[in-house]
Image (cartoon, rainbow, N blue to C red; front, side):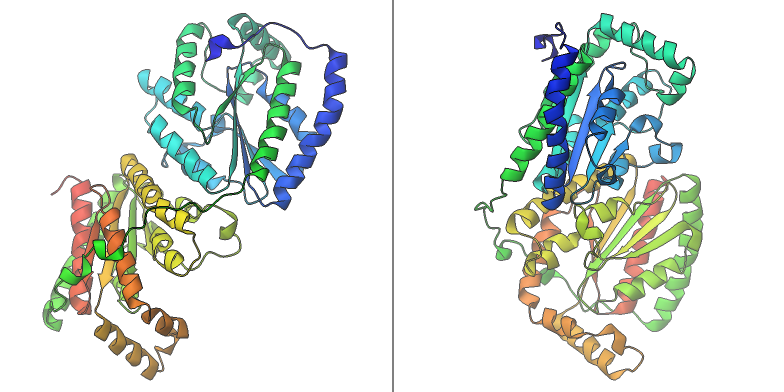
Length: 490
């Protein structure tokens, strides 16, 4: 791809000024249009070291409202950020609706740095695949993010000239300002690497704009024109809800096969509860020392016992080592981002536990059935969720997912108990009764969810919940087994 770029030629300063006078106005205009349309924009700038990305980004910023965008660079990732899953940093810094995120080196640079460093045996954090990158970008563009990617190409001779100028201007401080990996003397090697990267990630939804950057004036004109045209084109494109295949609810049947009459005495429950909690306390310390992060997600029917199960689980854990994340309908801030954003940004640090009281699976249950997500959105969510969990598992995160199952009669009994107990009335709402009327629809959605997202790296544990004692012990034992497996004790 790069060999076809013409690197010769020079744009006269007078012509550059004439074009920029009009083009600069249009840069500010499309920024305002994107803001009014509430479309988030991501601009990715990759390319050779010394390709003058900083100069070009600075020129662009002068034409735009500085309150509407942020500039990031993965060159300056902290050690703590490097310990998180590969895409965590990028999910964390997604632009809100109407804003712009600019990447002066992005996930592409981070992948290359991973590979270069791992080859030299000087770095240990996980790399990713081009397939994961394509999936990440598709998830964003499917969710109305405008993604424009630029690769700035220079000749080896021009690179040397630009690097010499940088060193002359900043001296040794230049390395501290931009401590990127060194391509010096390895032009052909990196040219081959970049060619493979561009070919593997030049997709319909996120194509590359290849920029001849030997002449920085011409590069600016080409990039700014592509930004104006790209945003304008995206704003004219409307997402059409296409006819997609319907997955009949009755095609899946997991829940009806469960035996919900499993029982246990109170005495046996207390005995095993103490035993399991004591074991978990020990294992948590070992998981912390091994720096193994844990994600535990709870789903289930209203009144199925999620809260009680979480309390028995956390009673065994050091409070400094876990967080419980109650997930409700997205708030005003969360609605400004991709629906998975609020889960990526709550991932546990190494050695700690993140517990989710309701999870990302709301997309294929309540959001699906209540019309908060379109058919296209919830149908593609199965693949998006599976990919997200796969990335977490590849990073080394231990994942446990629980569905707490009770029958309709047991739910009714618990609802009435809550209504009649003055200390529990806060637990029951009109919405709970309304959701109960949709039991059959929810059951079909749950069956489909359990089948389509039950993977080897993130399997579902279905908990027979009519007896709370049995349910709590099964959950504790499952977590114990997970910890022991990750620690190599199984």
